[in-house]
Length: 164
Image (cartoon, rainbow, N blue to C red; front, top):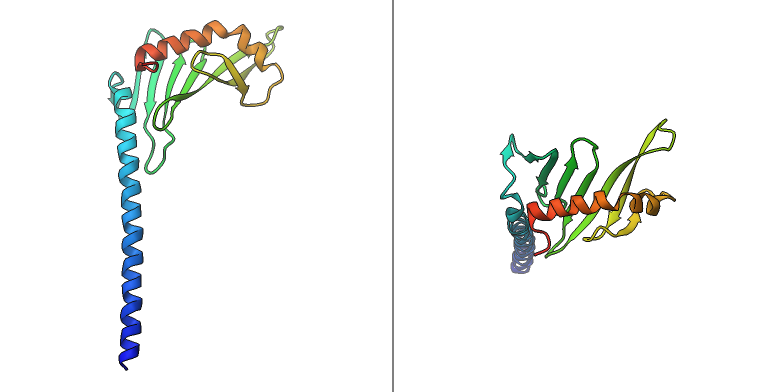
């Protein structure tokens, strides 16, 4: 009878330790996520007012927005959109520092019969890295739009101080 009591007591202790460990890990992960989200994104939202839960503002025909990561996600981003041409720059803050960049460009074909969108991965200087869709003419599209890309990067840096 005493052995069964000891076995049950040991089993209960193991369960308590297991659940306490899992709860502690979950709590630590939540705290790390919250700290990352607040420390990494709070400097980026200073100039962007919140309206109906969305951080977006329009300045000189450009929309600037900040999307903080959702709960337990690290996938927030910054966005800069030309309101006239719909070209945009998406910036993903990395942990603990740095950024990844992508641009979306609308390209009209020579006969203007249709246009297509090209998403390109660029570096912090606007230099071409790769195409998201594997387009064969992606480097040509990049070289024809390098001024547009660099202008958007300049505007983004002025708003968010990305290169400090």
